[in-house]
Length: 444
Ligand code: FAD
Image 1 (cartoon, rainbow, N blue to C red):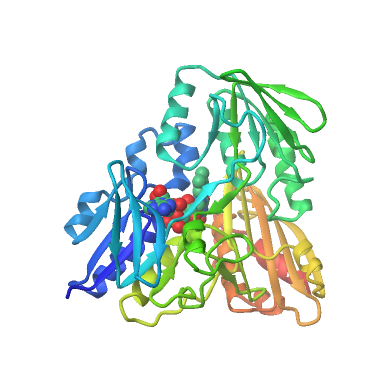
Image 2: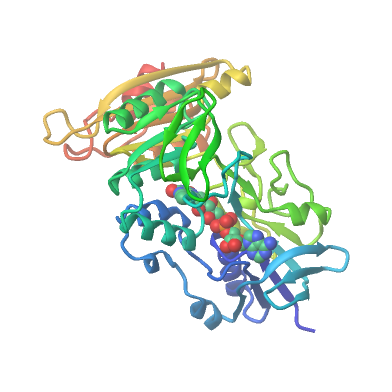
């Protein structure tokens, strides 16, 4: 009988898996179950669509269903997996009309994540948005174009909160960001976050750190947000950006092991604890190769890679996903903000012998027009010299420079070895001593 690979989730991880599996095995029956009405859209592009940097939502649709069908991949839209039975190798699917049972030989769970909706009154009012679905983003953009909103409160100062604060500022709104922690971007150190905070406030965004939202006010539509300090911030639009939660409850109930964050536990081959069931992307944990611990670090880059590996392993190959070092970059308010590895604060918490250096360099040669400042922070083990992490902020030349540091981390280089790297140089691209090399020299 025909063997069947079933994939839950039709976005980055699920479709990378489907396409890889098809490539490996032209005869296998492959089905993708997708609960929404679309597959394959670039969620990462949503803030740029909302700001109108990307005009048309269709540009965010990466891979049309037709292309998948042409590859012999069955895509069932509006099919939500609500239950699994791993002993029977089946899943139960809800569609608009019915419940349906579907059998599999191999299963890849790629159900992603959903925004956390904080448990505060008023979160169901009109004008409260999370940022994940294209449909909701289109609705929000229409409201912005129609001039419905003058001011917004963004709850959450993580990277999506900041991208949205920028998008709404570009759309002419007065924006306030409130963040419960004492700094924005909790995955960089507070000294580096301070640079971001001053750029944001300099550009007219009101920022309230160490502040929590306790209530969204309004009858039917939003009128404001009440903070734990008793302040009322009036607005007609609220963006909830307080993080994401893995869509893995149905798997957990079926006996698939989850980690502390509720994400699916896998081994290095992306196998779950149940035979023939794999997990990839935002629904799963990932190994941090700096700490050697599994953690929840959901990103699109990882989802694509893990999907490919799961597609390989579900079709008889033996591919390892060796993990991530924690590379991430975001652009907000004209700044490129990048990080990799672990923060100094995290290393201290782990009681590692940690030291850091921070330097200010430039993106181009000192005499070259248009040069911009770049701040580089290196975090390293002062006993062995091994690099543990890095953060970089500047107005140009940051994002891809950071990738050198991610490579260094992955290869477990010391700061001494980092300072010996042969990096390219010409005046429009870098000073003769690249900021990375200056930082590495100072670390010794
Ligand atoms: P998802 O994209 O969440 O896809 C999972 C799919 O499964 C969804 O289509 C969902 O409808 C479906 N599904 C869920 N449950 C079920 C079920 N029970 N049955 C059937 N189908 C189901 N990452 C970066 O690396 N860089 C960035 O710059 C970046 N920016 C981002 C900006 C925003 C605003 C957002 C929201 C995310 C951003 N990300 C970024 C993260 C990135 O989008 C995700 O990591 C990526 O989409 C994860 O892919 P995935 O396939 O694992 O999960």
